Image 1 (tube, each protein chain N blue to C red):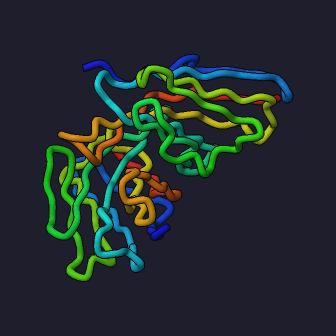
Image 2 (image 1 turned 180 degrees about the vertical axis):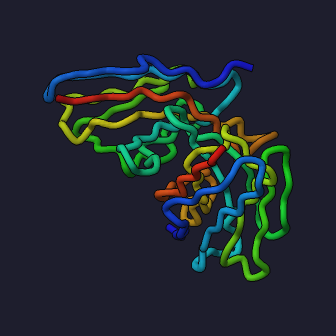
Image 3 (image 1 turned 60 degrees about the vertical axis):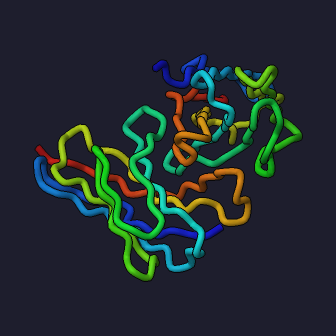
Length: 115
Length: 113
C-alpha cells in the first residue's frame, strides 16, 4: 500500500513570498491532517479535513495560511505571505477511520526555510 | 488538553529492553493513550494505543497503571533502528470525534551499539 505522499520535500523562500504544499493521502482515507513541526518541538495540528469539509482549523493562522481539499482526496496548504517564524516541517497525515480508527499515517513532510 | 510528561531523553543498549515512561495524571475516563515515534527526517509513525488493559503488538507493549495516571512503552529488544523521538499522547477529550492528537516534546531515545 502506498503511503502518504508530499511535495516538495524542501522549499526555501524569502519572507513575504508565497508557498504551497501538496499532499496525497492513502487511498480511501477520509480524514486528512496538516501539522506544523518547528525544530525541536512536537507536531502541532493546523487543520483537519473529513472528506472535503473542515473539522478543526482552530490553530490555523487564517490571516496567512489557507488549506483546501477539493473532491475529498488531495490537499494543498498555502502560506501567503510567509514570515520567518513559518520555517518548519509541514507534515500531512491521513486516517482511514473505520478498521483503524485511531491510527494516523504521516507523510515525510516538507521542510520550509524562510529567509 | 490533558497533558503528558515524559523524560526529555533516554539511552539504552542494543538488544536490551527499553521502558519509556509517561505520566498523565489528568487523564479522563475516556482518553485513549497513544504512542507514536518519529525516526530522524521522517514523519511520526503509530506504535500502539490502549485504554485500560495492557496491549501488545509486533512493535511494542504498552503497560497502563491501574489508576491510568501513568503508562510505560516497552521495547522488548531494542535495535539501532529504534532510535527515535517517542511521543506519548492522549486523545483530545474536548473534541471527541475529531481524533485530534496533541504532541508534546517526547522522549529522544538513543540506542548504543
